[in-house]
Image (cartoon, rainbow, N blue to C red; front, side):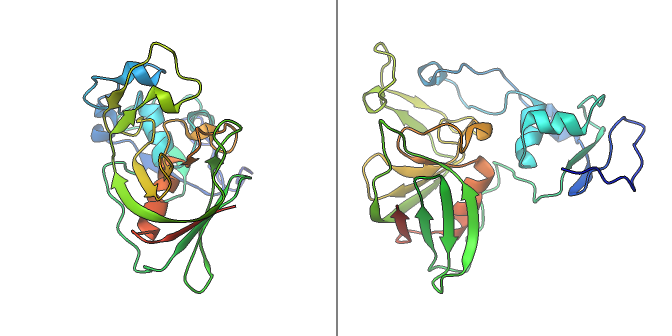
Length: 239
């Protein structure tokens, strides 16, 4: 991303970059709660929520980017209430705000094995595009014509190790609470294929690089956008 040389470096040591804007961290932002989480799904059981692990993670997801990139935009800035930081100029994402349904009730979803998701209107116009992780060698994406059977916002996750080829042999069925670091993120779009759906992720930097356990995985902000564009009965094509 090129630096806009017409804007001077600020006193905080950051430089204004094209496609960015300033944001002041609020006391509510900084309040958390933040808590380090175990990496294994089975170890998440019993927690009341699976929220953000840090203010940096929260702000990076809010502005559709990675913690590393947000840090690079704000070198020498301490992330705390009252601090002014440079962020990507995008609509902020908030996992507590359920997306409003789009007036277009006839949209359709297309997902390719190459990791591209498109939503089109009934007339074929492109409404939305996002990179995705779709299937794997062990759990390939089932090609065909399907349909949306439900959309769940902030879902709990029912972990069944029998459905995971790489699950630990000692794992047992468990339930993981809702939150942005839930294994399926902030939204689950169910389709009429058992155990398959389109959903968010706790690890947005891996989208498009790491394969999924069969489902179509998106960043949380893209999954929220998808949820606003589809409804029960929306066609889904995997190809």
